[in-house]
Amino acid sequence: MKIMGFKEEINRRRTFGIVSHPDAGKTTLTEKLLLFGGAIQEAGAVKSNKIKKTATSDWMEIEKQRGISVATSVMGFDYNGYKINILDTPGHKDFAEDTYRTLTVVDSVIIVIDAAKGVEEQTRKLMEVCRMRNTPVIVLINKMDRPSQDPFDLLDEVENQLNIHVTPLSWPIGNGNTFQGVYNIFEKKLLLFNPNEKVTDHNSVLFDDVNNEEIRDYIGNSVDQLRSDLELVHGVYPEFDLEEYRSGSTAPVFFGSALNNFGVKELLDCFVQIAPPPQPKQAAERKVDPFEEKFSGIVFKIHANMDPRHRDRIAFVKVVSGTFRRNTNYLHVRHQREMKFPSPTAFMASKKSIIDEAYPGDIVGLHDTGNFKIGDTLTENEILNFKGIPTFSPELFKYVVNTDPMKSKQLAKGLEQLTDEGVAQLFTGTLTNRPIIGTVGALQFEVIQYRLLHEYGASCRFDPIELYKTCWIRCKDKKILDDFKQRKYKNMALDKEGNDLFLADSPYALQMAQDKFPEIEFFFTSEFK
Ligand code: G4P
Image (cartoon, rainbow, N blue to C red; front, side, top):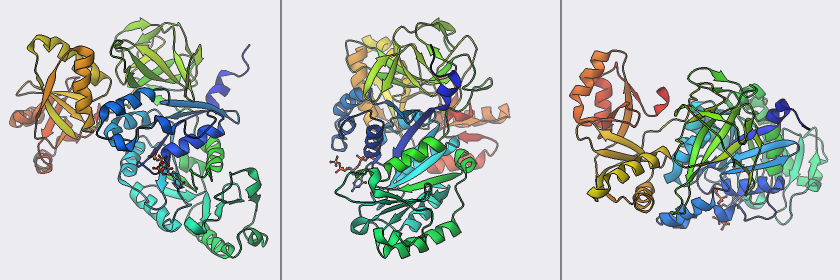
């Protein structure tokens, strides 16, 4: 007998990602959240799976760790009746594209910022990705136990650099050595910090009114500063507005210290209340609502097995609508073929288990032998193509040169499959007909070379190519487009789907092309398609 209805199951789900510039405290926060959910028993469990910063040049090590991290790709747990799914996003910048893709299937995001460093480069980039679909974000300003920037300055920085309004929902009292705690504006209570003590309910005190003189007993004369700060906060920042947050225009901000587990429970308690449940998703054909009865889902990540004897992979599917069921026939839309899955897995904390059912917001791992590529849709017979797993213009480019003529088929197949997995992007130069690999990080070239050899028996080398950026181009006027392609024939390429790409060899060349051909639209993600 069903204990909970389909609607309740959807409404209690919160599927989100945590992002940060490396070192701001994403892993630490994830771990503390899992501790609250009872999903792990001890600190260190997530940490041990993290890609170690010291190993940046040793990609084998990184891949090994990525192999282990399959289990932590999705961390599901129950908390106060909510089902929480944290989707892991690699912090390593060479795997940024994995992160971008994951962000396209989350319903909200928590951004962690280091209170001493403020907004950093990776945070800005990730925020741009959130902005593409107005994903609601909550900001945690972390490491308040360390000397920090002024909280007002930090809020200004978030507003200006991340281009979003802010509403502080907690306020710090001091920082570093003088850090005494935070005033939780959302719940109107004082939370006291003691670096040597685990946070329990005992050190939070309810105060409806900060003018209550009893606060002085807890934080001494800091109360004067707190009061004047809060007065300013109320004067400058708008009250929290759920709609503003959910539409992605205002970010609620919390202050805390993830390492000390301070302010994390408050963040989580607020998060489950305000963060959106699974949202509708746009397909090329129509918008799909999670509450629809029929199942649909999208593949957003493919993880290769590290064992070279088994060239199998796990495709991660986000359930968009309906109930996913084990051993049931679903339509693989791109292949126009029915498929069923005898052993779909769900991810609860660091454990994988076979499941019979999954609901919108859940992530299901499907065993794959090369049928899937990123962006694929599964449905109950309807033709749907979900939008919104964009390909981003890569930053590094190289020609692929086959070094074993006997293995050209294997090389082609390997390149096709690895790029389906999203390891890198594959283009073909129009003039040269040579394959070009584009990546976000340098490590991917090594990954590709190694995997081609070990999984496909193909060997290759990479030749340099002078390229600044690739961009997809489009123009309503076919004549102008053809003229452009003809003039720039040396700099044209096709992507895997046959879309036209302009290969700009310098920022100047790109600017020139844009100036000379104002009718042509230049796109830096494939989202326009
Ligand atoms: P990341 O995933 O965003 O890259 O960051 P991570 O959680 O790994 O945190 C980076 C470093 O910052 C870690 O120290 C971590 O212990 C520390 N840290 C995280 N939150 C806080 C906080 O609230 N206060 C203070 N003072 N430090 C914090 P590390 O020395 O690099 O790693 P470890 O050796 O401690 O594991």
